[in-house]
Length: 256
Image (cartoon, helix red, strand yellow):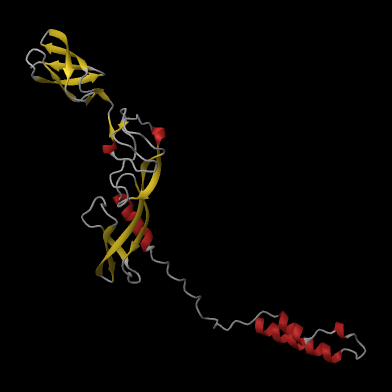
């Protein structure tokens, strides 16, 4: 039908060009080329040909699947940034297993098992991850009481940088056991509880023996914090006695 209309339009244009008076303005004549240009391009496809098939959807992104499987294996406080395969996976490979037998990663390296066409391939993967640790915001002297404002959080590589550095301060009052330089990561051994008793202190000791309670002033032979055991000297026998520190220069002794 479209072909017949096209032929008719061309014939009409030819007829007009032949019968038009010589003195007619050339602009009033419809050129054949204009008629041809106005027609839609004929389709080269066979009328009975079927429409092109839609491309199959892409396979799930392997890296996204890998990240989703590795994320739950991160230790507490560790943020996963990326996972890099150490092999070139076959086209269309899917993820079969990640870190077989492990419930939590202890290093950057792990094993990934891929499957393709019924075959499996083991591949090494490396994770990039970070964790936050505390670093000193200023120089802190030994014996100085510390507070949250004395430290700031800093991101470090999760598995190799500053191992065992603290992520937060203990809830109890602490002092620096040794000098801590600004920018230095904070470790547990650098903090101690404030000393409540020093060697040579006269300590008020509450002694309980059943319903009987007495108090005595005994000299300390050691340094200790609240909750620790200090050694005091029995003035009558000169023998050392272990007491539990309850406060500054105070302790208790519960007789069996």
